[in-house]
Length: 217
Image 1: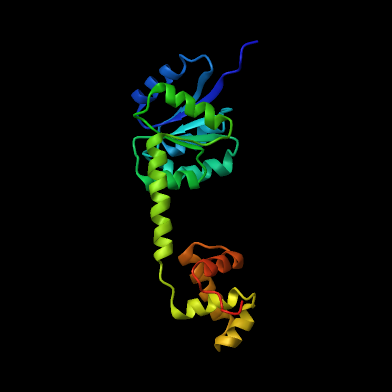
Image 2: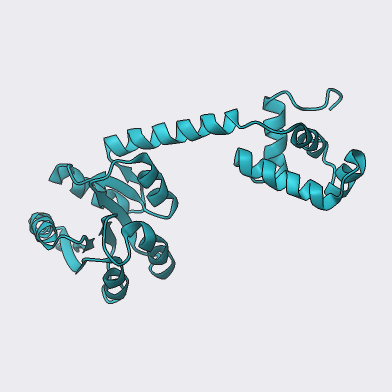
């Protein structure tokens, strides 16, 4: 029994490029291009008319760019696995596309063998990054982690973290610091935003690592 082909959709504003990629992909009997679009608006309209499994999405497209349209794709067509296929190796682009729901990122300078490997990988729900994209992403994450670690906290914010680590409520913290519980809540939100932390446990863990816990805790 012949294996069913993977159903692909190409979104790129260069028709000649799309035609070339389509011809190369369909030389592989396991690949079938079922749709094409030259801009984000056309993509959203046509994608719902196909049974696409993998979308090859370029970032630079008119009307609605790939960067702008990706959230709508994830919301409207959650079963479609998105593989960004771009000339850009900018780490910010890579991080944004992955954080918005792309399953992979590969550069247009890749060899056809790698493109097919990437398509097969994301079609199964796994993530695929080209070697260069992977290196760029690691650099980006490391850089942002360092920025978080270097982010200064005010004296008041440090006081709030210490009391949060004791398990005190905003009301109790406010009483100890002679400020309102709403002000405490504002401090907590500011601290979490600065440090990219999302709950009291994470704040306590941060305080422990930085030696900010009260001495008798």
